Image (cartoon, rainbow, N blue to C red; front, top):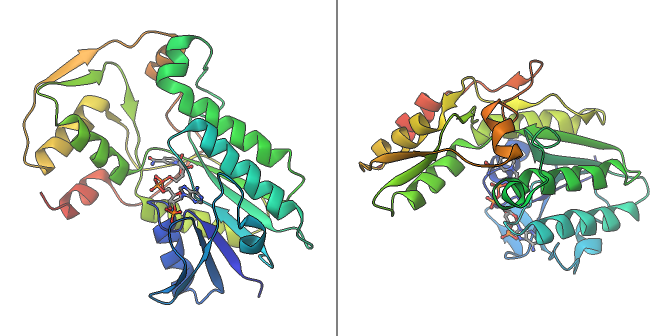
Length: 264
Ligand SMILES: NC(=O)c1ccc[n+]([C@@H]2O[C@H](COP(=O)([O-])OP(=O)(O)OC[C@H]3O[C@@H](n4cnc5c(N)ncnc54)[C@H](OP(=O)(O)O)[C@@H]3O)[C@@H](O)[C@H]2O)c1
């Protein structure tokens, strides 16, 4: 069996992917720009995907690459995908490249300055998706909704404010990263599938409800102030462009189960 390379294997999406592959006894390697060597039985290869340094060595011999690395800067995020493609394109046989993306990429229109400022993330993810489609490599892309644990981090940051602004009319259908990991691994071990059905948690909630739940779990109370966001992207999101399509695959862990596991 050829090795499986996981990028971003130290991050929210990547950690449970690495755990699943280890449980399955797979030959596994994790690309990291902060770690190297073997830690807890996992081999980390040092590479910086933003610059491309070390990427060629990291991908060598990989039959499957699961790309979970990401960066908050859109420019850096796209550079990471481009450098990974460049490195993988040199491999013979060509590896199956599996990418995590976001539900709503391609459905949230990002045109005007307000759209770009607030929803540029969707356009950036779409650009990376398109780079993978055009790469000539066998590929699978899984669009997932917002991760439960990422929502908690956002809510904790917002709880530093005395009042918390909430986008009115916006709903999210977040998902547990452990379920995302199960699906990513299933797809990675299967035949290249192109764009897979959207992946989401079992239930959609108003944003205000999710924020209130996070604040309660952190033992905090803050007044929530509804804000109507301007622009076409915001209007599309209010109409549900960030929610999974009708043929979506749904994870099994609920938001309520996830919250019950959280420590204040
Ligand atoms: N968070 C969400 O709600 C959500 C929802 C849907 C899709 N996604 C997408 O899923 C992906 C992963 O998100 P996440 O929340 O798991 O991210 P995360 O927890 O912030 O992890 C980011 C990962 O990227 C790696 N990384 C950062 N800079 C790097 C560089 N220069 N070279 C190589 N690796 C680098 C980091 O690994 P090292 O520090 O070890 O290098 C880290 O493991 C992103 O593409 C994101 O857009 C996220």
